[in-house]
Structures are given as C-alpha cells and as structure tokens.
Length: 235
Image (cartoon, rainbow, N blue to C red; front, top):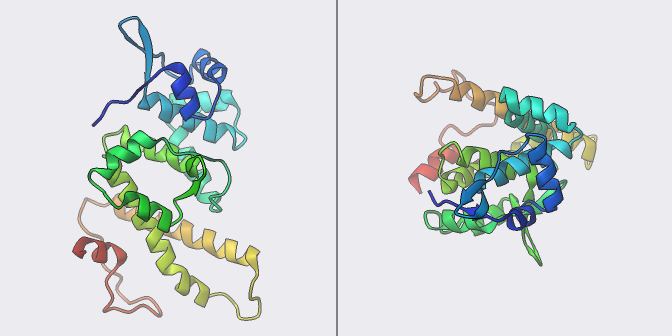
C-alpha cells in the first residue's frame, strides 16, 4: 500500500479547507498530530480521511463536540453511513477526488475512471473529478482498515450497478395514478435502499458462507438470470 504524505498546505487543499481549519481541528483533538520527517512536519492519507469524515459530519449539522465524542467512541463512521443512506441525492457536499488513491487503484482496476463515471459515483468538472464527501470519507475509512483501494471502488461500482438494475422493478411498484411524482420516487428509492442495506448487513453477519436462497422466488424475478455479483464473477 503506497504511503501518501502531505504538507499542511497540501492536505488543506486536498480536503478543500484552509490550513487554519486543519490546525483548529487538531487543537480540538479531532485530528491526530502530524508525523515528523526529519525537520519537516508531514500528514498522511489517514489524516486526510479523518478531515473528510469530520467535514462530512459537521456539514450535516453535528457540532464539533458531538463529532469528537463519536470519534472517541468509534461510532463516527457508522453515523456518517446512516446519514448517507438518508441522503441519496448524491448532489450535496461534493468535493474534489484526491487523485493519488485513484491512480494507485488504476493499476489493479484499469477501467476505474470509466466505471465510476458510468454509475454516477463521480462527475467531471473543469478542475477534476467531484464526488460526494461522505462517500469519500467511507472509502478512506475502508482503505485505512486494510482494504485495497481498487477493491473498495469495485464494491461501490457493484452496489451502484445493482441499484441501476433494480430501477425497472422499483418502477413496477409505483401506482400508475401518480406518474412523475418525484417525492414518491424518492420515498421508494429510500425504501429500497434501506431494505438493501438491511439484507446485505444480515448476509455480512453470517459465518462467511453464502446466504441461503429465498425459499420462494420474488414476484417478477427471473430465476434463470444470475445476480449482478454472479455476472461480475464470471466476466
């Protein structure tokens, strides 16, 4: 795993903050002290991930004191994950993607850029790629727990494609009497997302074996069609 190092100014720029903000977060104990490289003070990618985590939570209305308490209890990332599930628009709090992790991942996942743009995990801007700040924080959290960057992004792409594949089935369950009801669309998307998270969480808590198939097929499901994960494994 490549070690990334930043000066204070470089890290503040990558996190889209000012150096003064970074120092303030460090003073409040929200950021670990920098490391020393000879006479130079340097920060790592773990510092950048923490900054983005704090920023994402703070911009969702949590006080710095509350965030500090959650970090001490080890619940900050779980709280952010919950908030992300409630905010599915993906348009708020977009920040620039820090490119070294993307470049590192490209070695094992050459199509990474094409795929994340295809499924809407990032968008292009004149200054580079933009992605949802909270999602980048969670990607950083997984990365710094030992999951290679390319595997983290592959999982995100797989989940996004699964959601895209479900769109026709979600649409089938909308009443014909209310076409174009964007509020109802959002409710149904959130409902489907919450159920997806619950089912995936149940499967992840099992003993590592594949979960048992449903005893009866879902209405409208094609038993002969493999899952998105099956198609990915065979491609």
